[in-house]
Image (tube, rainbow, N blue to C red; front, side):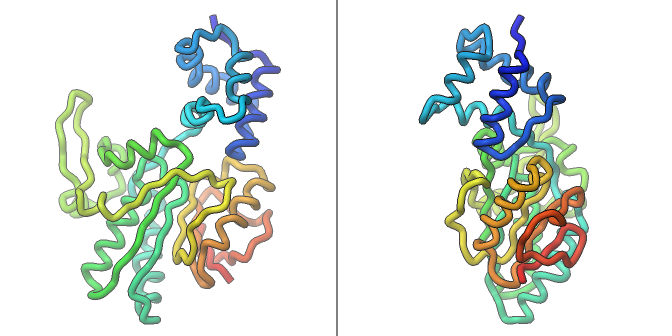
Amino acid sequence: MLDITDKEFESIQKITYSRIGVNLRPTKKPLILSRLRKRLEDLNFSTFTPYIALLEKSGSEELEIFINAVTTNETYFFRHTGQFNYLYEQILPSLIAKDQKKVTVWSGASSTGEEPYSLAIALIEFAKKNRGFTFELSASDINTEVLEEAKEGIYDPRSLKEVPQSLVDKYFTKQSTKHGERFAISSEVKSRVEFFQHNLLTPSYKRNVDIIFLRNVLIYFDRQVKENVVNLLEPCLVKGGHFFISYSENLNDIKSSLELIGHGIFIKK
């Protein structure tokens, strides 16, 4: 039966930390074993040693498969509703008051798409009530498998638990499948999001972004990696731009030009 030794797990820890900045705790050992067992069987590896050698090989295509397997993606529409309310009721009207008609938004850890599609719905609703307002919305993740799920845009009812029924009726189509009831996001919403793969440990080509959502990802990083990630994103954000993290995260232990103004909401000084 396949198992993973302490030495092999330490090697997996080093690879994960160096490639995506995530420090796997020893308690994650069973999770890693369960997520990679099928892959090792497909490769006819009876131990993790040859698999680790494959991951360490320069230019290995296996690394993407590995990252997809070990990254966790759990989210739902309008998570932390208060932040979306602040965006809709405070930030967007303040930009309109400054005669800024176009807003650029980036969801930096978009997972299966619930966050960027929630942003798209909020922005579409705002545009319908504010003539001349427009927006550009991008979404990225390191996991290519969840990006494909996001582009497909089909969700189970649990993902819509925070969505008002009026918005469900307007922007989703109910489907009956062999897996049960599903909801497909409308083409109106889907067409407004540009998805792309991005590793937060690397610089981004994005510039002059007004709003960045980076929620439920910093919690997986240690202090140094968190600071590196934030410092890489800061140049992408305009002065006075807004930066969102989740309620369970903070930037108290890092140096940045971001000033806390609300629950998980920062402004670039």
